[in-house]
Image 1 (spheres, rainbow, N blue to C red):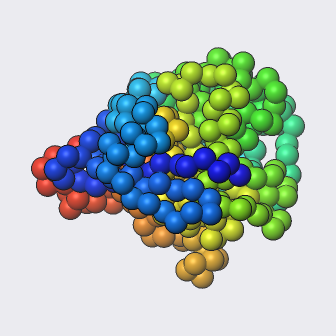
Image 2 (image 1 turned 60 degrees about the vertical axis):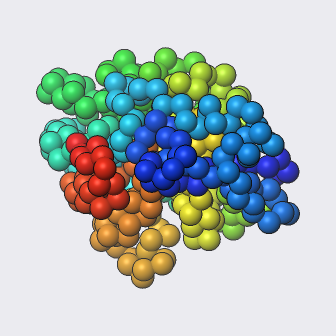
Length: 341
């Protein structure tokens, strides 16, 4: 774990005197929390923190996020899960065949999806890998069907495999969503996607929940994503960072990441939060059935929005869209409807 201080913008209303706009979005920041292993947290005015620790910090934090896949990130966007796997943790096996998956995706687009995330290999804890041939056989007909239907919603391919991503992009996908942050397949960084989501995971799906350990989950995950962004060699204006809730993390690790999620804006790329229906919600609430965790999922997602997360990966799109609308109306009376679809 790095000993370097990490600088977290503390979100506040844009109406606060002296507030700067966070990543060109719906929140402001006027203070920075200085986080360093072995030291108590310190809160400084934003300008003072930049002067002491990082002269480029303010430019990195208040620069508007570039458009991704044709989408402005001035308001939260919903990436909606379309699993065409028999064994995903929440909805595995529910979409029997490409036609059902295409119909489901088109309905999600009608309900307010901003991105359709198509996945053909489960990465739930304990999942067994599938062949690239099988993965492609699952996802390509769905992507082709969505495109053939004239759906304008951008498509993301959720895969760890460069060959699958390349074929999906040729079929019409635009975003490469890789839970391994381009580490699983050495050819992944060469895939010509419009955008890449780099997600943090400790271990592989088969082993990641076997006693995951960190010195400091928040700082360790930040440092790991920072290193992956650099190692990818890709320009930051094509990247998205995801702290990987539930991927090699305990409940305590997940909560530490969600509580101070705004730290990840210091990476200088948009932040994606994927909490929908995940196991930590079940452990905290006692709800063992994944598709009955929508209330907990939405609560965690709204916390993410209050920390400036630009993209939420969700299953329950209509419900989350409705919750976002109400959150915005309560939060910011001076800029009504800015988060509406």
